Image 1: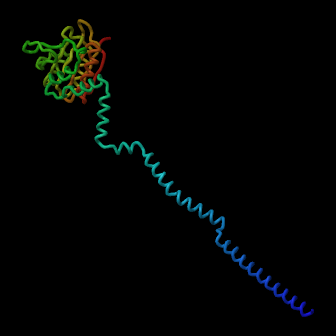
Image 2: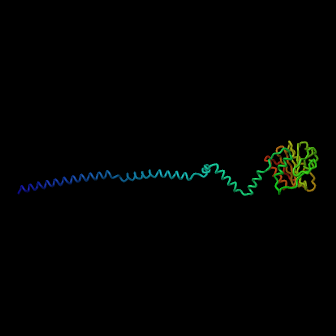
Image 3: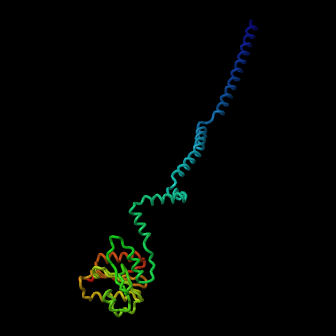
Length: 271
């Protein structure tokens, strides 16, 4: 009986030993698996950082491309204008020219058709001015020349007769010798309405002052002229007296025809 108990006790001890060994192996195996899982499982912070970094890296090129596209679309208008071919600019200028009103185009044509400001003597000097008058601005003007012929518009007048220059144009007789050649244009109805002349002289300012002083002291007949104007064009002097409106128009025509014209005197004669 004792032997049987001893064997039973030994058997139980053996079984107990086997059981303990099995649990220990399982624990070790389980522990290894857990450790492997922990090593393989990435840390949350690292995964998030890597994910964000990759996302930003992927988005950055796209954002740069979008910015480049925006820069291209927002290119200033003046640069676009610079990039236009020369032919396109000419076409646009032509279109703008076509948009001008008909009256504006007509004015431009008149401006281009102005007579050339070239002259060789006093008659041509006034003829260039007279040619710029429009239909509504014209008035009967002329002079009977030395040969007795009636000349419409500006005509030649001799410089040898100082009394004639004084009586018709207001040029003092003692100044006749300082004039090389002269021209005259008079209103055919009344000389005091308009009388103009041109004189080649070496002293335009001195001649202007002499004419002004001479006409200021004159006793007029058949009405008083309103105003006297004298204008220098290079080595010529132009003078005109008469109706204020006609004189203003004449002055404007002279200065428009000759860009270097200089008004020396513009004084009233009627008091």
